[in-house]
Amino acid sequence: MGDQLARGDEFEKKAEKKLNGWGLFSSKHEDAADLYDKAANCFKLAKSWDRAGSTYIKLANCHLKCESKHEAASSFVDAANCYKKTSSKEAITCLEQAVSLFMDIGRLNMAARYYKDIGELYESEQNLERAIDNFERAAELFESEEVTTSANQCKQKVAQFAAQLEQYQKAIEIYEEIARHSLNNNLLKYGVKGHLLNAGLCQLCKADIVAIANALERYQELDPTFSGTREFRLLKDIADAIDEEDVVKFTDVVKEFDSMTPLDAWKTTLLLRVKEKLKAKELEEDDLT
Image (cartoon, rainbow, N blue to C red; front, top):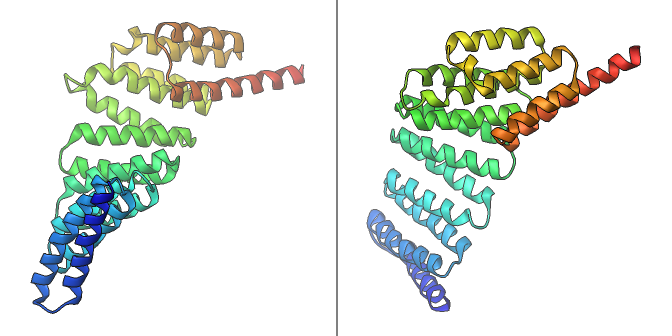
């Protein structure tokens, strides 16, 4: 590793020398780019991620001087991949520069891919607002390029985080839209009941019995097979428990479903919110009597 660091240093110094020396503007930047590329590879082999990242940024800037925007964008991505191991903030900055360049040259699919990457980095930092913003941009670009599966994956992330932030209506609209589109696709139609369940859980969080009843009716019209599923039964039984203000019934219904189909952390979080509201309502009723 020490050898690789020393070689990286040597290549980097040669690159700086090229840039500071005499020579034709474009050729000295091309020569320096070649040396920076070698230096960055050495730093990567030495697992010196910050050095590799900063060198890839220098390489990107050389490509920009030579008006090679695609190569510059790719170098910013390489820099981001190195920084992912040490600093999400630096990785995001590099990916944002890459996205900007890919948008400039009309590589929308690539821009979408890296918006998605930025969204994932914000997700890992638990910055859900920023994650939503980037997943929305990615979804929009994937849709414009007709990459439906990737667009839907990004939309589902938006809905998931929106619900976590209690933006239930936004989440409901996304899940319902994905369910509608999935019905016409033989590969995706089996996932419809899952999307409708997620939309229904968000409806339950809003604690509006009339809206919940209307939604369940709408979902049955949308997919006539839905009323025969365990997902529909769960939503219907919980709606009944809310209507009857019965916490015990609610708990039994959720427990039974979970024993057959284990609930993930997201669904559990939403159901706990519903239960807390139901408990509060029950206590309120007790206080009045």
